[in-house]
Image (cartoon, rainbow, N blue to C red):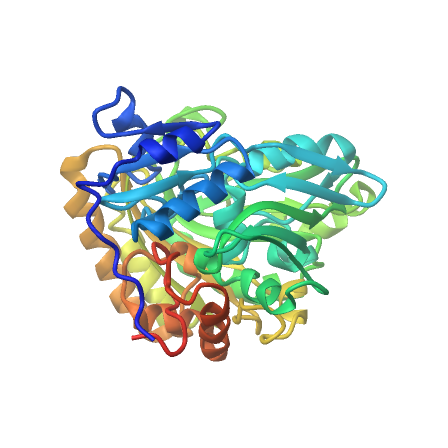
Amino acid sequence: MSLATPTTTAETDFTGLAERLRGSLILPQDAGYDTARAVYNAMIDKHPAAIARVSDTADIVACVDFGRTHSLTVAVRGGGHNAGGLGVADDSLVIDLGNLRGTTIDPAAHTVRVDGGATWGDVDHATVPFGMATPSGFIASTGVGGLALGGGIGYLSRRFGLSVDNLLSADVVLADGTLVTADANQHPDLFWALRGGGGNFGIVTSFVFRTHDIGEHGVIIGGPVLYDLADTAEVMRWYRELLPTLPEELSGWLGVLTIPPAAPFPEALWGRKACGIIWCYTGSHDRADEVLAPVGEFGDPLLVGLHEMPFNVLQQAFDKLYPAGLQWYWRADFVEEITDAAIGIHTRHAAALPTGHSTMHLYPIDGAVARVGAEETAFAYRNGGWAGVIVGVDPDPENAQLISDWARSYSDELHPTTAGGAYVNFLMDEGQDRVRAAYRGNYDRLARIKAIYDPTNLFHVNQNIPPAGGR
């Protein structure tokens, strides 16, 4: 079986597609084209042939049918946050879901239905006023679809699992233009693949997630505890031993960073390099002092910024610091153990942070995540540890090489201490071996399911899993 070869769009007449859409079709000659093609990572500069801002599921079906019929490269954009900018491609038809942002909360059933173009900020807006949340990520402007389909690691993961562990059903437009619902009983193989397999299998038009009661009516206790950069090794040794012993309602990710020159950070700390842990406690406030005692008592912190706040406030804390349009270069690995050798590497490269936005984070993936079997969903790294990411970030394109070189050097030295694969949501264009490593033993099953639902690999602008049997 040969896969369809995308054709050039230079001579494609998009008039027929435009006539079928309730939404808008933006072409290179149209006003707003450059804004429409831009994604979160400004290092990505792609020029699609057309951008369809869809208004409903029928628009999505029309785009899929048109792309398939004309053998076009099809890219699907949700929130546009993807590390490698995989919501857009040169000479492609971009299906932009950004106008599909509806949410419907069912407080009695503890579920929320979310449209395919929504952000996690949209979800939090619907759920937190009811004292609920569903596991998501760490930045509210991130798209639901991109993050959830890759796994969904976030503040609530230790207690409630990944986003995919809380996915109850998904409505999906397939490569042949049909609309199906995937859940535990309908298309269970597709449902398995969607939970970690990324955008390989179709376009999800809506999700239904389980929600959970958190904090006191949605109010949690969270914020940063920051330490001097010289304390990094000591903090990391303490953190690696402490975290697995903590109650699962307390989670914290560790990073090396530059303290932002803005409130609420004290002006005396602005621009200072530091090691920090961002904590999130979602349990009963009656137990907060007891649970948080180990966090506040360790070492000699520069700042203890733990406060009561609605969960969505913590989720939004980094949105203004990392707006769309910065230059990003990503490197990532799963980490099963923070070794002494790794700590030495972190310490050396943290001292060389090249810009104020550049950083390294370690996100916990233990607790409830590890109680799901590695083969129960497509997301395979279930035996505890962290998802590590190193990002060189800066607003100035002149610094693109600087931040990339730092991230590559850091990652290349650290990689031998890691588990070998990486969280697909953090991958850039790094080759098929890296995609395969991200899924461990689940990759071959994913390729077989891909052959059923997308045999011509129409949906390939992603961390691609070619269909089994394809050439």
